[in-house]
Length: 230
Image (cartoon, rainbow, N blue to C red):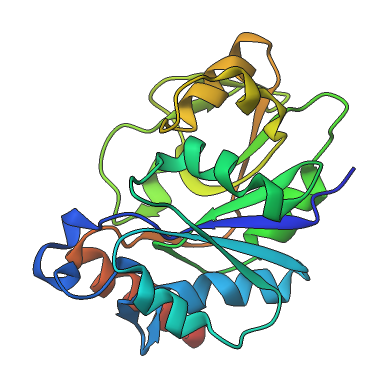
């Protein structure tokens, strides 16, 4: 079964952005003249995702206003507490519907093949419970660290210094029901899938930039300009 809906994460506080997020949520920070969230929604539109659920918490009214009147988008508001990625996804399941779902972070910019199309083409629900889109460390702009996952020859993942998780994935959300906490990271779900050998990854074939900090804005704009010049 192919995913029909997408969870777009937009609830975070954006603390690494410093003053830029004191009065504006991170998804509305402009990159190349357009809010980050619009870059993400362009990917959804181009991939033909019919149902998008956006979670909100910090300065939520601004995001609600920005998205008002846009068809095919539902809001999953988290209050009084933010629920992190795992809790946020579980909270949104009534809006997402049954079956596997895409999820996408709103604080990255992409070039090259649509990441959602890449994931859809590689998804095999018979052997996968999760499929993460990864970026080689040497092409992970705006991102430090040693990487997150190591894929084997078949794409099955283990944790370790290797490729960087891009913030795009397909997941079967069934295992969320086994977690008692209300707020928790999707790392908990990944750990369950890793233990069963059912978490896979595929490498993105284009450009990617993490825009989680102020320096990422300049890097993302440079990457987009390079893609236009090619």
